[in-house]
Length: 218
Image 1 (cartoon, helix red, strand yellow):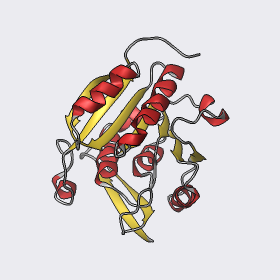
Image 2: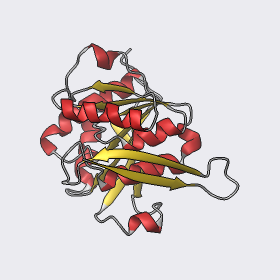
Image 3: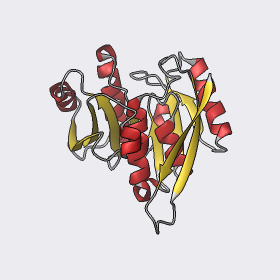
Image 4: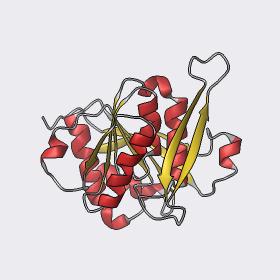
């Protein structure tokens, strides 16, 4: 395990011109313990839209090394970081990363498609998920979880970055199936600073998803 540092710079005259986040990761590209390109891009999006995230209630799904959620916490958001219950080593690392950055985030196990007491108490304004669309076998459980969370907080939005491996048509199918709709779709590299883009590769999309209707589950 090693500590990597991720810096974010604002414009001149911005009251918040710089933050730095330290992450404990495994450089062997182990799931949940490595900072993947989708996480870097989503974290940059959070930083560039910081006025939107500041003071919000944020939930990160499949957080792993938690870079996007940590950036939101640095901006003053109330952040809950989650990952699979069956990955205690990932959850422990998330706690260590919060301590390293002196951030008071809530860390909890949340397995997609599992309805236990913890998920019923979550009321986020914004749900984050970096590269959570990597295993098609888990897509239905993921979208079922997202749909439930958005129905519990009908004004909330799910923001995710993903490698466009199988085409956006699959994402569109799942959104229709679970009563969701896309309100924004952008190339993940379109807003990434060149110094960061040069270190990454892939066809990465960023999408914002909301309920397709105003119906609430509560």
